[in-house]
Image (cartoon, rainbow, N blue to C red; front, top):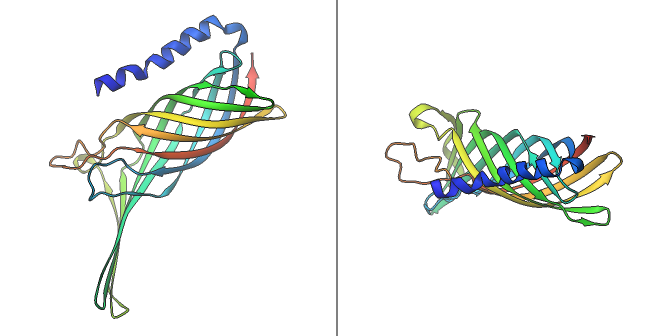
Length: 232
């Protein structure tokens, strides 16, 4: 874990030096982005075969261009990561449908280094950097079970639980994010769209006594937003 964490902070250090040496070209922009997350919750346990659920995310953007092609972007915001385990069991005259969904709500802070080559008016975006997330609400889990016999519902359960304290997941996670996207000028604004992959390093179940499972915040996201320059 220590080996992974150390390099994450090299990128902001390099960008800070670049900022000092290229201040004459620096351009500050602010903006907003919104999008959706699709978590697969990286797990080595075949029993915990999580399938992605669509979940929202949004952030404020603080974009600092240190040169025409290189920039530094901080994105404080919110993101929900959600996934589901679902199965259907069948037997003669019998069907059991089971679905277990978890919802994790985080305050997130990606710190990104961006390379942005131009292709006419279109600008490509390549992003890489660390992201920290802090649990904003207790983990929520929904369990839904329906049993049928001869086509008739014989039993069902629809329950929501919230897990805190010793039963909850870790409150802090750190990971690495890589993305690719495009930007296009529209008057004073710049329209941006980007797809990203998120790789969490923290076993969010690792604090649970007796837990034999390892689960990580991992998945993809898609975003769109606007940037507006506010000064040089």
